[in-house]
Length: 510
Image (cartoon, rainbow, N blue to C red; front, top):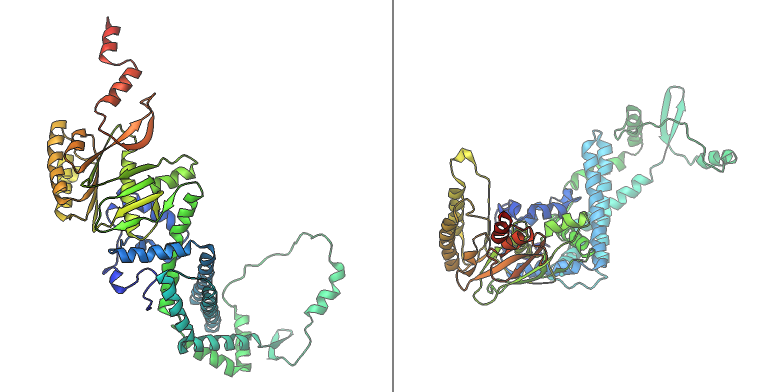
């Protein structure tokens, strides 16, 4: 089994060009989800991985298998230990790069290589002791075995150990007489450190005394005296330091690209799972969706807006979950109801769940069956821009025309409160024209609108309504249910509550 990448099973799964965050990220608050997942992991530059949907069911299943594997605590711990070793390697190399003195740079370099060798060896040792299931992790373990047995790694590993041991064994004496410092070979002179500590032990107090000594900031750079001492030590051990110089040149590009890529790419899974574990700990459901590229009979149980949930849980507020499903010829959710009732949140939940599923990720909900789209479009209301000399209605129509022109039967569009800048009659007329095109394309769509007439356009439309509290219509429940549009019932209910109906006002006037 050839290992390509822990993110992509085959080269065909990789994006052809460097990905950029799609335009719909902000509309669906996916940027907030990515920010929350990658917080604290900036060194891995993970955001680009979240901006590239997969295009095949096989590729999605490949990632889902690895996600499930990494949910096992023992495997996550193994990978985190490896990540710490690789972080230490990068830290050493970075420190060395910032220094001026060559021998000091070389010391940091060999320490970095040592961290790398130890991390790679330990990774194979620990992965060999666990039962792996996923194609990706099994293929990687086989690659790891071959790499560690290769001449390139065995030579690097043995040379690093030899040089570290020989450098650690270097002993020398410093003799200070007045202003003259002499460095010479160590000739088995006794180490007086233990004797001095023993002599002054009787003066040590039981309790710690206040330390009045001044503390000096230790510079990472060697000072001139340290440099001269080290150069004298080099002259005493010329062969060893010649070996060190040759080693640093020979292994300048010591790290294996596949290992370095694995260290970065595996963090995509760990970062996302850490975010989901936070939500699970608060009682929210997370599931692995069944994804299809043929069936549009979709479903999500107890779904929620992931970005909103992160904010609400931080404020210790309740997260409201909703269900949705489509069956048979159904393709378009027409979502209506009172303002601030959760309609846009429902639309974002629909878009987020489909997008995250396309990344091979678990999604927010108890159970999910979702569709693998080829393109995802959003059409959210934008403020009128006086500079482009377009009215809001013209801008709406231009944008929706562009979307429909690019869309296919496998696309998804999420439209939020469009056609709001015209009269109701015009909105109904234009909305039906758009609905005709959407129906002809047979694409999945969520349309949040005040034009309730669109909810009964044809057999492909499903009416979803944001409901309010039965006793107090001013209270939003944020629940979105399948039911016929409410018409004016919500306004009438509020008018009755506050004594503002026609009959009540007429009676009061009398």
